Amino acid sequence: MLKGKELWYAFFAALVITAVYATVVILTREIPRASGFFGHTLGIFGFILMLMTETLYSLRKRSRSARWGRMKDWLEFHIFTGLVGPYMVLLHTSWKFNGLAGVVTAFTVTIVISGFVGRYIYTRVPRTLDGTELAGAVPEEVLRRTRQLMALWHTIHVPIGVALFVSAFAHIGAALYYATFLK
Ligand code: HEM
Ligand code: HEM
Image (cartoon, rainbow, N blue to C red; front, side, top):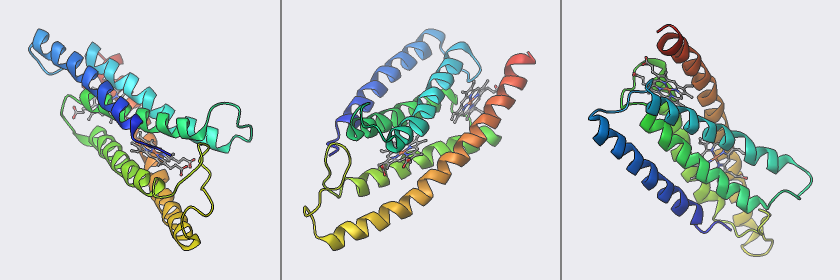
């Protein structure tokens, strides 16, 4: 069962990242540019964390051998990277949201909000540490309805992820071409 530990870890990671960002702003007396060294680094590392969010939990969920870690820990890690990655990417934007890059940011914000909704539905049902619903813990009717709601949520959350990564790769390709290599 998720207890919110992962939200605290993400919060503390965000505090550390904010402190580093604030130090850079104070030292350079400007907002880090998205294509500058610091802004670029934030974008790349944030994006790597987001890619891990998109892939690792799904891979573990579909693996038949339960040897590499409990589902609960993987979902906690999913939420941790799913919050810290988007936060780093947000600082990467230099607070400008033009064109395609703005669309990618909108998808990123949407998937994080959607993640919180999913986490809320998911935690309504008592589960074992491996994510299996505990039979008999709540009336069968509640379990059935929660499962339906979770399935509906999946049909929204997952396509947002796909749209996000398709547009993110287009942004990365275009940004690297125009802002990095053509310079
Ligand atoms: C989901 C991840 C990402 C999001 C949401 C995002 C979003 C943004 C936004 C909003 C901007 C500012 C656009 C503007 O000036 O109006 C930007 C700029 C930029 N991004 Fe990203 N970015 C992401 C990942 C990356 C990655 C991984 C790279 C590099 C490998 C990258 C490279 C750049 C560059 C070079 C610019 C500067 C473009 C310019 O100055 O014209 N971005 N990004
Ligand atoms: C970059 C951000 C994120 C991406 C790309 C992402 C992507 C995904 C994907 C693809 C799945 C489907 C996994 C599967 O069933 O195979 C999923 C499930 C889930 N995500 Fe996220 N997610 C992100 C952020 C978040 C956040 C911030 C939260 C919570 C606050 C969250 C909570 C969940 C939950 C509860 C599930 C369902 C777990 C299950 O049914 O087994 N996600 N996510």
